[in-house]
Each structure stands twice: as C-alpha cells, then as structure tokens.
Image (tube, rainbow over all chains, first blue to last red; front, side):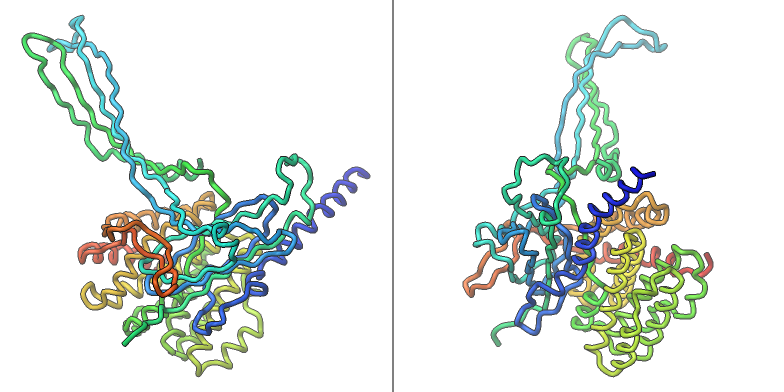
Length: 202
Length: 300
C-alpha cells in the first residue's frame, strides 16, 4: 500500500507539468502569435496549438483556397529556442505503376482434363497500381533566416502540410528511457489568417 | 500500417486476360499472360504525428455569399426536427448540420433564423453533453448582436470553435469528427443545391475543390475508426470520395511552387488543378444529397 501511494505521488509529479502544459497550450496561438497588422486578415479556424517536446516533429494538414491570401505565423515558448524549423509541403496522391513478370511452368492437360506429361510456359504479368502520398517541399524557413511568418496568395486550391520541428537542443543521443523534464517541453502555436486576394489595378 | 491496410483497396481493374500465342509448328508450349491490377495507398516517407484541420462552415458561406449565390431557406433542416434525433450518433450528426445552418443564416444576415438555430444547437449540445462549451457570455453576445452581420458571423464562429476546443480538450475526437463531417457535408449540400452547373462556375469549382478537404476529413476520421458510428460515416464518405475521384485534373504546364513575384508578393501557383464536368457535378450532387438526407432523416 505504501509503495502504491509512492507510485501515485510519483505519477502525479511526472504527469502534472505535462497536463498543465497541455491545458496551457490550448489557446496558445490566440494569445501569443502576433496577428497581421492588415485588418482585412481574419483568423482561420485551421489554426492550432500543441505541446511539443525538444526533438519532436509534427504535421498540420490544412486546406488553402484559390482566390484567398493566407498568412501563417508561428509562436513558441522561449525554452524551445528560436530556431524552430517550419516547412510547407504540398501533399498529393500520385499513381505509380509497376509491372512484374513471373514465368511459371504449368502442366498441359488433355481434353478430359488429365495430365499429358508435357508442360507449357506461363507468363504472368502483374501490374500493380500503387497510389503514393508524395510531399513536395514548397518552403523551408531554414533558408529564410528562420522566419516565423509567411504570407502568400493562392492561385489554386491546395492541401498543404505544415511541418514543425523543434530542435533537440544538444540533447541528441540522449537515452529515450530517461524521464522528460518540463523544461524540455513547450507550446507551439500556428496562427493561420486569411482574406480575399485584393484585386489590383483598374 | 493500420492506415495503409484500411486504404489498401485491392481492385481488380483489369480482368485477367489470357492470351494464347502459338510458338510455331507442333510446339506445345503456350504463353499465358494475365494482367492483374491492384490499387493500394502507401506512405513511403517517415510518418510524423499529424493533425488534420477542416475549414469551418463560415469559410464556405462567406465565399458563396461573395460569389453571388442566393440564400435559400428551403434548403435548411427545419429546427422542429431536432426532437426526432434520439440516438447519440443522430444528435452529434445533426449538431453538425445545425451548426452549418447557423453559419449560413448568420452569413446572410437572417437574424430570426440565426436565433432559432442557435437555440437548436444549444438544445442538442445539452443532449450530447457539450453544453459547457456555450457559456453565458457567449449566449448574451449572440442576443446583443442580432442586428450586425459581421459580429454575428464572428460570434457563431466563436461558438463553433468553442465546441471544437471543448471536444479536443476532453479527448472526444470521435464526436468532433462526426460533427465536423456532418457540418462540412451540409455546406456541400447547400452549395450544390444553390446552383446548377452553368449558373455559377466559381461555386461549382469550389465544390470540386472539396475533394481535398474530404481527404483531410477521412485521414482525421481514420484515427477513430474503431468507433462504429465513425466507421459507418467513413463508409458513407468513402462512397462520396468515389464521385470526387472521378473528377479530372488540368495541368498548368508548370510544377507547383511558392515563389516571390515581381511585385514582391509570394504566390502559390502552378501544378494541377481539379476540373469538373456537368455530368460529374450532377453525380456528385446526387451522392451529397443521398448522404445528407440520410443524416437528417427523422424516421430512423
């Protein structure tokens, strides 16, 4: 019973920071990501905040519509560092065809279905149509001075994947079995804003 | 792997074709060629933890209002049907439907209907145990902004995301998936039945683009496929995806890119775009109507 109580206390101590961080992260992007100064931009419901640990990579899949301008900005807890990687991919399904030929010997049967003792060559051609998900890189903030925001016009509706990677902070090679400290975790918010693309000219 | 196995649809596209070719003379050897085509979906890249977001109903209705579609009250699921939804699944589905009606009426400034639908979703929220998402301040804000379209749209949006937040925080992703799917399907129903193919090309195009949203939705629901209600919804939406899969693709001639243009603005352009014919539009509309009508059916 004593041991059981100790385990409970230990679990509470370990889980409490995670749980409180989790709750704290819920509206993180609303509180800490700086919205655009352009009043025409409206917050988009596809924005999201989540709890990250150092070394973690997660994807957020969103839809961006033709005829809209989007602004995507990041905000994060200071302990996660300032060099969070932020990439944008397009995820598409592509059909890939592969054909394999298998040569087999098959017994020849007579009119009554009895084996004749002779064999014939059978070539089985199997065409496999595989639909693969392919991620095509469109933007990488590590080539843009680790910028935490991007604004763009969409010419045709797309399904985009925003990949967020929190650097390991020198912890690479650490044993995964060690308990994670609360300082190894923090919130990351992704604020998505949208507005109709302004029409320029007469 | 789990996902792969669900999505791995083994289709026998090409019927086995047996070709006998004589090799000359009395040679008894014959070639038999069989073509078997198997379709599968695989992810060959390292899979990160993924979240799938679904645009909220207001985003669609804001667009359709701008594109010139007219408000049509006859398309709405009447509020008096609410008492007929007695199972938790029917209540969650119709919570999604009524949330879309709320966004639709608010976008078009139909204030009386907005209040009626807000009351209906409050009632359903009680029944499905998410009434805490609607606090007193939110209800008072709706009542205090009945004469302002922008405020009303913003508040109804807030109420939708309050529900999303509540369900996420309480780890009820399955219920959220059911509500979001039904809400999304209702927006499709309203758009598809507010225009015909030739009348409003931009609305038809936006409808075709929902193929991508459906992919996100199915990926989201997949995580909850052990729930029988979600599994049944996946089956209906997979049926709908066959109509979307039939849509064509137009090549722009250049690959997709996110580049800075001369004026300094970043533009996401190029790549293939989805195209839709009149026959495909009608087939899609028929499937949407069938699934939507089964959701709002009061005779279950």
